[in-house]
Amino acid sequence: MESKFNLDSFLKLSDAANFYLEESFKYVNEIFTKDLEKLVLVEQLKDVQFSEEDLKLIEEGGIPKGSITYLRSDKRLVQFLTVETLNEILNAHNEVNEIVSNKKPKIPKKHVIKSIQILGHISNLALFVEVLTNRHLLFLNHNDIIDNFVYNQLSEGKILNIIIFICRDELENGSIKLDSIKHLFRHRNKAVHHTPKNADELKVKVEDLFQIWNQIIKLIAIYEDREKFNENKFSTKLKVEKGIIQDSYIFF
Image (cartoon, rainbow, N blue to C red; front, side, top):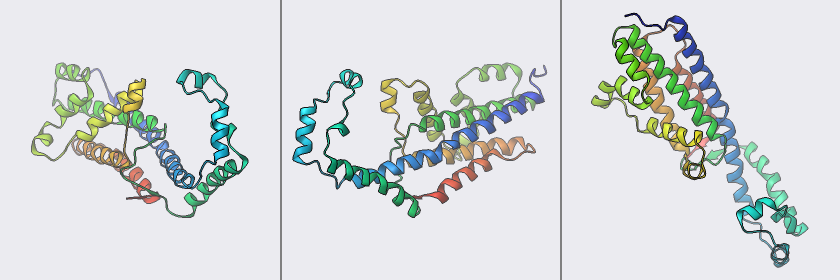
């Protein structure tokens, strides 16, 4: 039986993959820029010491300690600091941009990303993988490697199960691993279902991102090698995006 999905379906999935890849990397530069600024600021603020007068003003200010009372209050720490301390903090902030822009920024590989933009990158990157996996599944169906029944059963299943089915030979011979891709989808679930617990547990290191990117490149290359579509390779596009990041920062 012929598949009900035709050329238009392939084109729509390709367009979606392009969209999700572009969207995911819109956030990456901002992620590293914001986190780098925070890292530098922490270093700059190490030399700022609260004076006895600061501590007295803070105590007298009565800043609420409970979560709800704090959120309802308009009292904030900066309101109860001396002018001298505020100037030191302001100078530290002003020095951040100068330090960051004067040389190629350095970011530790073990650094846990704090920027909220990680939600956008993780979510869109996972969708990128999912769309191309669904497209490859459709390719297998059109190429009579799987029939309509198998296609329908798989297409309604979990994305990792589909990937495992597609790459079962590569997994068996050890030419590809999926641990980082598995982590990607765990992160995606935490990003999409952003409960207080998931917000606390969503911890992505810089080195995690590179491992995820590398595994995705290998996975997509497997799809492309079988499909042989006349198109700009998605694995190459991801390599280019990764290369831009590597050229922009020093990771140590």
